[in-house]
Length: 108
Image 1 (tube, rainbow, N blue to C red):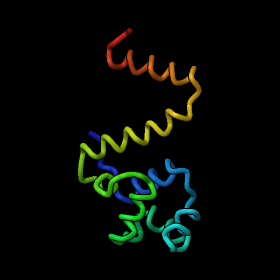
Image 2: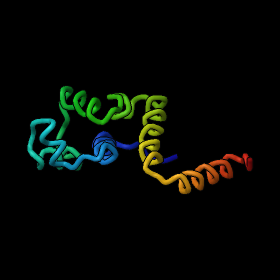
Image 3: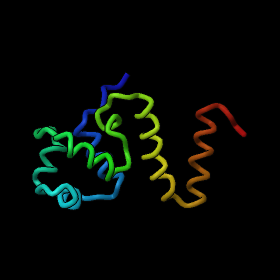
Image 4: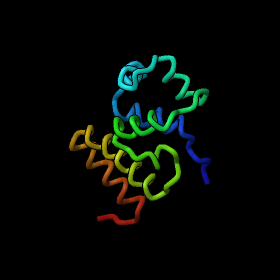
């Protein structure tokens, strides 16, 4: 079983998946870029207001960011994966789906 992903790690993952730089996120949160860096390093706490705003900006739930809800986490993980998949070419997407079928045991 893998270690749980911490809040600061989820924030970084979600920010990157949203296609935002630390500077862009800082501007949206009305904080400095070093503040975002400190948050993502786990050296600065996140206020409830900041958490809610980040969840909205990243289109994820606060429960996912906090790592509290496994079912929410699964759906949020799938949403993040879907963002990657939509960037693939049709051929590459076909290869990914083929691999998933093999892993699942459905050779169709």
